[in-house]
Length: 419
Image 1 (cartoon, rainbow, N blue to C red):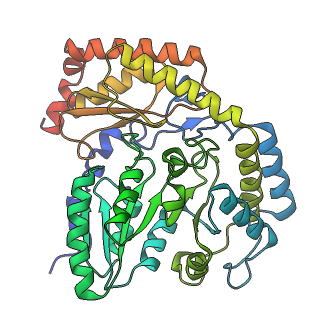
Image 2: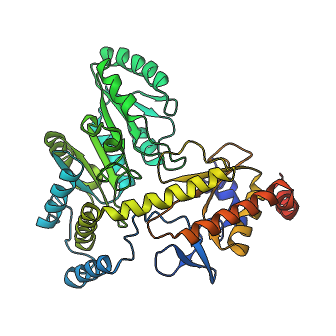
Image 3: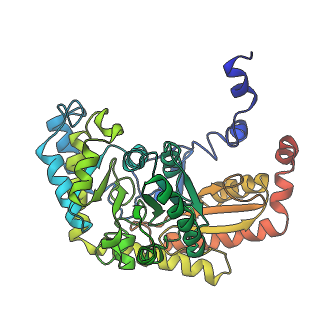
């Protein structure tokens, strides 16, 4: 028998194995200063394209005032205990009521975190006789939630209605045998590629198959739709989404999340979500802060308008310069380049050190080997100057990538990595 830790020490995982080369710079970097379009990285000012503060709420004086006053009045702990025991307040109920109205659902329930909340929602909605059918590119929180399911599950090809229909046929046959139901899961916006989920096509299949639809709209809430109510509103199918989930960590620039559905389903979830029943209530500083943020989201459409002005300027500018940004239909802006992991490291270092551009880098195994994905998140705080500087920087790094500069610079790293 081997020691449990032997495997961990020998195999640090697909990302952990690069820790010595990457930690502190490429992963776990430290951005400093107020959350904004420009921050400090290792003492230098950089244009930040990796902050999910879509509407630019994080550092607004009126937001900080409400957060500060709530902290002074309640501290960081109040209310103590789980919602069911001693952590329930009028403010929690008020926020739930306003969120439900905003996303056009009968009721909603607060979640401490989007990730753990989504896992728990999936776990609570399905029993062992039920079948889950979900998009293969769904977020890790969905994958982990599906792992909790004791019954059958099928994946359909990303945003492929034909694949979904085939898997619904399989699921329907199986559900007729088990006596269970079917839960389909997709996302409002897929956060890596920026594509909206095919919600209209999924809903159309309700005419042929019996299932319920669960949507994770973390990146769509606040950014899509006429009022900002998300991808369902954008595609005209919000009323056909049976269970809607979004987080405060993106457009709301906070902590927490919520799930919304018809009243009976929310009542059931309140009494069966293990991650909420056995966890401390969301602190008042976050609840009052979310109420203020939601009010600004509802009453200040100019924030979303400015966001999309920047999104369109950035994405159109990249396309005009011949960059591949995939098929994004959201604010998420991926830029695809060809290159190895060592080249990607040299490229990103050049961007940060010589051009003052900070964006996220994604490489294998998250995306296919030989591809580099630079992921940009435009916000309402970015300026046209930020965008022009970024476009110029991207043109420069592409030229160095294509002429072999990064390959030469990364030769020693490549040799050490066995590439």
